[in-house]
Length: 121
Picture 1 (tube, one colour):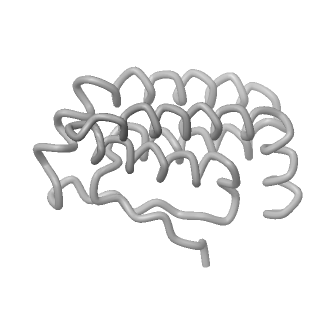
Picture 2 (cartoon, rainbow, N blue to C red):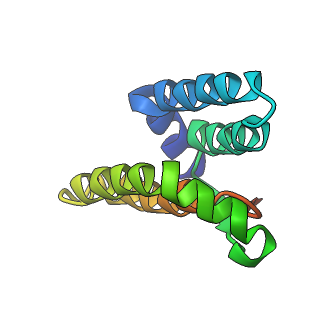
């Protein structure tokens, strides 16, 4: 299911969303101040290309100030977007697995600093 889910996800939007995250990361890395934020965008792009079969472990306590700045300036809008897309996907039975992946990415979009992406067991 992971392989099929990742292929379908990649074809129907994962490529474009991951590419957008990557471009945002490049733009943020142009400035010295934006490099830590750009690295987090690359982490999000990596997850966005193939989210099935991966788990996210968020730890706010590792970088609380960076997570707070991210949540205020970027995170809440992105998390809200992932929440809305996840709810829309969960309307149909076929879309529920894709909605769950959007909810997973919502966590990382809100608090990316100190978060680890691991393979699911």
